[in-house]
Length: 120
Image (cartoon, rainbow, N blue to C red; front, side):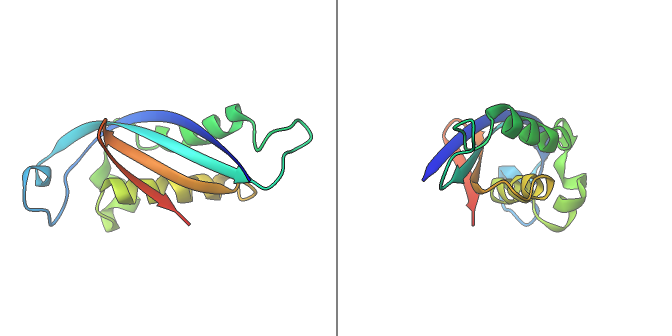
């Protein structure tokens, strides 16, 4: 099994609905996002997928939420904009853009010490 990872980031603001504490208030993060893809074998060039292609897909998805108030993004009107839901949103959005791509996981870091991962 081969796995590759790429990282990118975005900035955004949110507040957590139904949370009792500071995160209930409007605040922002500079999120780091790590996407991992896998394959049993390699393509003719010896790759799982070209890093630049995976980076492009990640950038397309994060540019839709970069510098946004995430609670107003359609997906997060129904789903609380937690790091867990952010990871699922990015995973599903990338998967829709390239159905042939096999994703292992998406990890969203909201701080240097706190992350959430979504995988199937």
